[in-house]
Length: 124
Image (cartoon, rainbow, N blue to C red; front, side):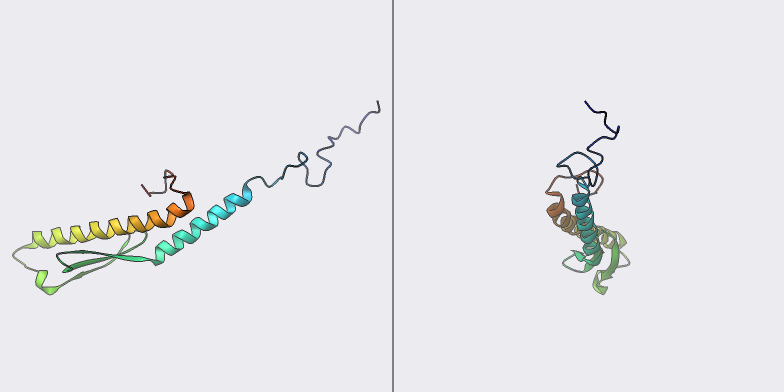
């Protein structure tokens, strides 16, 4: 038997590594997933939902990222003698908008994650 040069024949192959194996691994799939997530996040940032209470007397506009963008009050709902009612209506409208934004997030990310409910994404 002739002595080899001491170099592993698999490492001498173009691209290195074992035959039939890609040195890229799953990197391409990961990059695609990251790209899809970034796109979904951008779409959520641009999307808005509106929550209402009191038959539409209180309206809260919220981004898809659940950030409040505005609150609109009809003049007839502002009663200085019943501030608690107004506070309750504002809270109800915020809760309604938050639920709608969460549903929007679930739709957007659910298509990407396949409904896996991945921890840390705030989608649960």
